[in-house]
Amino acid sequence: MEQTTEVIGAEVQASEPLSMENAAEAVQCETLTFSLNVDVLKQFLSELSALVDEARIVFSVTDGLKAKVVDPAHVAMVETGIALELLESFDWTPHSVTVQEDGYVAEIGIDVDKMTGYLKSLKLKDTELRFSVDFAKRQMTIDGPTGQRVMSLIDTTGISDPKIPTLNLPTELEIRDPKAFRAQIRQAETISDHIALRYDSAQNALYLECEGDMDKMRAQVDSETVQQLEHSRQRISATGETEKYMTSDSRSLFPLEYLADFAKVIPQAFRLTIGDDYPMKIQYGRTVYLLAPRIESSD
Image (tube, rainbow, N blue to C red; front, side):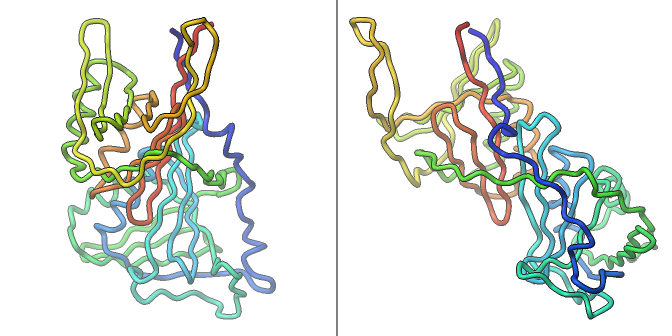
C-alpha cells in the first residue's frame, strides 16, 4: 500500500496578503502600541511556530491580534488569535486612520523563531510587556522589567493569507486530557511515521493506531463523544462489486510528525473532529488547527 499526503492547499487557496494601502482610505497607520502578558504571547507564538518561522499578524479593533498560517508543504494550517480584551491600553496613530468593517487597522510581519527565542531568554512569567510598532521604521520595540529590545519587522509581501475551509465531518469528540494525548502520540513516534485515528461507534471510543516494521500500538483516548453522524462508505461485496453502506464509524491516517508538533502546544481540553480520509480539526479557544490525511492507495 502506498501512502501519499493529501495537500490542504488543494482545498485552500492562499490569497494575496493585505496591502497597507488598503488599511486606510486616507492615512496609513504609523504606530501601534499595546501591552500584553508574556504567557499569552508565548502560547500564541508556540501555535504558529509548530508550522512556520515567519507570520503575518493582523491587528483588529474588534478581534485583537489574529494570524492564519499554512506550512510550506500545505499539509497543516493554523488560525489563532489573542482577544482584544487581553491587550491592555492599545492605541494607534494617526487617529484619522479609517477602520475597515472587520476592524482591520494594521498588519505586523514577525520572525516567529526570533521572538520566541527572545521571550524564552527573559525567563519571565505572568508579566506584562509593552509593545510599540513603528511602521515607517519597520521595527517593533519591546519594553519589559529587565530592559528593552528593538526587533525588525519582516516584509509581509508573499506571506499567504490562507482561507479556512468549511468541513462537515461526522465525528466530533472532546479530548479531556491533552497531556495524556501527547504521551500517546510520543509512544506512536517510536513505532511509525504515521498514525490512524479511528472512532468505533459500537464501542463509543476513539483509538490511536499505528504499526511499524517490528511493533504496533492501539491506545484508547480519554474522550467524550459530542457528535456522531452516519455517513456513506464503500466496500467490496461478496460478488466483487463496489457497494455503498452507511456507518457512524470514522477513520483517517495522518502524518505523525505534524500531529506531534502541534500536540506539544495544546494547553487545554480540546475538540477533535474527524471523518473518513478527511482533514483532522482540532479546536480550542480562538485556535483552529487542520491537518490533511495521508491517503492509502493501491496503484
